[in-house]
Length: 192
Image 1 (cartoon, rainbow, N blue to C red):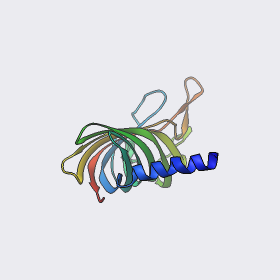
Image 2 (spheres, one colour):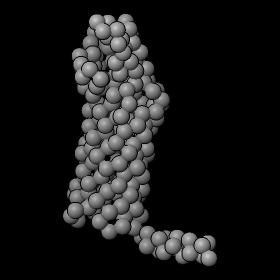
Image 3 (cartoon, one colour):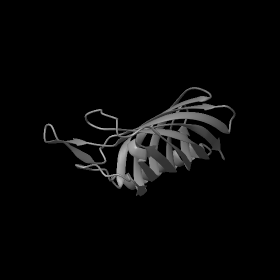
Image 4 (tube, rainbow, N blue to C red):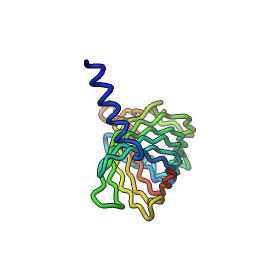
């Protein structure tokens, strides 16, 4: 009986979803900052980068679910002409709400997988600045649909973990380094 009931529920969901799945691509620019536990941001300036990817979206009236996969790149410049280049594959799982017809508010968790890091060129005397292979956080996004197929978005990713540590010599304690904050803007194009 439970197998039959599960089959009926899944069939109802499949019939309800039919025609409500959208596919699309998106691309944009980003501005990345790094923060640490002491909130001393003297070592790294904001960096500029880009992202590009695709998404599938399932809509249930005014609410829905979006699964994305993106490639992102950023260069972050620091003191003494130092820099870090980061290459990520990002997988956000986003829940959205459409308060009006052409506006979406999106929020959800995001996992970033580090493909490659180049830099920093100048090591800290007492610390480690290698980024972790996996970064996790949350992102928020607002998308305005200019047409049925073309949207403009603004998004912010807030990393939850520190990607290194250093020792504060005065207190002989360690502090976390390089928590990602990525603000972006771009366009989305709906294929279906």
